[in-house]
Length: 323
Ligand code: FAD
Image (cartoon, rainbow, N blue to C red; front, side, top):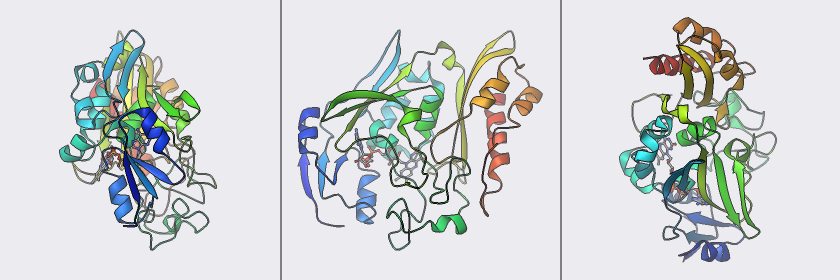
């Protein structure tokens, strides 16, 4: 680990004042400390924000708001989450391990870095870690990599389960920086890699995530998160689907569909949502609606199974919601 200076903040103002070029905020530390030990990230200064009071899980007529420093475990079990937004609770419960969920925060989860093995190994080139060095994953070990939103410069998946469910729910992320406050749709917060994969999101230097808000969606009570992975716990998604449906008389009036493990960012599927509208809650209708889910996908040598897996994961989630 490289030497760095360390400071602790007790308020948002203190945190912002301590941030400087090349500094990093420390929340639960479950990603940051690993990456610092491996020298994948090398901040010159670390600002501990664990005492910054960005807590609270609240709901009103407009929706749900969650403070950035809430722990994943607490959010996953909160009554305002489990009943009204099951897909959020399920996405969190299927993330990482109980020990990590007890440490890790919502803000840190949204800013975790990709699990691409080349990114996490400073001995190999990686455009995301060292711009301009190349992407060995394109022609290398790419079984777990993305098929949607990729570029020749980067095929790394976005790893967060929570972000997939939040994207399906049209959540917004609240940010506070030296220039004040702003909110962005989470879908607009994450960037596609293009030729600049090291720029992963719209966060400005020194800016803090203060929380997320989920617009009220009464029919999100009928939602689920299905995650397909190589082992049943402590593993990232090969493919996942976050789905909510509004059903009346056995017919789908509206649907929300987002996928994980397949995209370079959480991947919303508006064409599938549209195709589900007016469909019966039946298997044949689900299979028809997902026919084009992977349109535009660019499978790699070792992940050509992902388009079919994506379609099946969505169908499985819909079948689960159909009971
Ligand atoms: P930290 O490690 O403290 O920070 C992460 C990054 O976010 C850092 O860059 C930090 O500077 C920045 N940051 C943190 N908070 C803020 C803030 N409020 N504002 C601005 N910047 C901030 N995740 C999944 O979704 N699914 C999984 O299946 C999964 N499996 C895992 C398995 C293992 C073995 C491990 C180690 C992790 C796994 N994770 C998984 C990732 C885990 O969820 C993240 O490590 C965790 O959510 C990060 O939260 P943290 O509070 O510890 O963040």
